[in-house]
Length: 146
Image 1 (cartoon, one colour):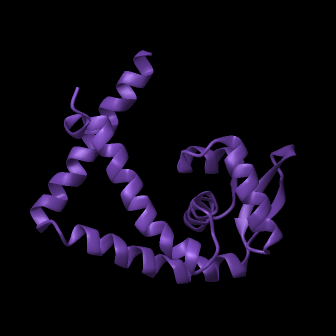
Image 2 (cartoon, rainbow, N blue to C red):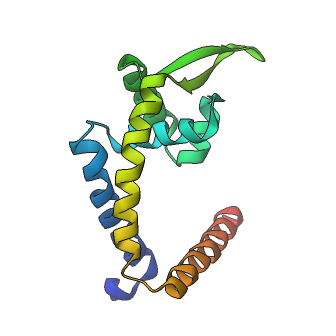
Image 3 (cartoon, rainbow, N blue to C red):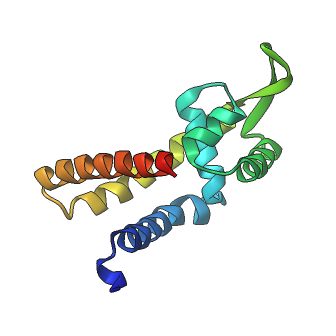
């Protein structure tokens, strides 16, 4: 098998390359790990949510989210508040400092994303998004089949 033409390998290599160039922004300028950035971004979009919601929306494992939450909480970027519907559970929400940090990072990572997308014509960008959606659906079907 030629890995250079094997779709899962190509997607993994591209994903790693894109993640690394985006991560340079939040890691080098703001000291955030990939997991911390994903949690921060998920909370900025969601408001206050359960940890399980963050896990589902970030594709991170429970322990990865737990560590990221602990660090972000320790840095004063998010807070845990008691879940009124579950006496044992917690809800997570960004503190003002977390929102401010998110607001600084987003334009920088979006600029990098746009630089990457500028390699494609608008029609190619649309086709890429459509193809990615279709492949994601198929991958989920295969996962469900076992």
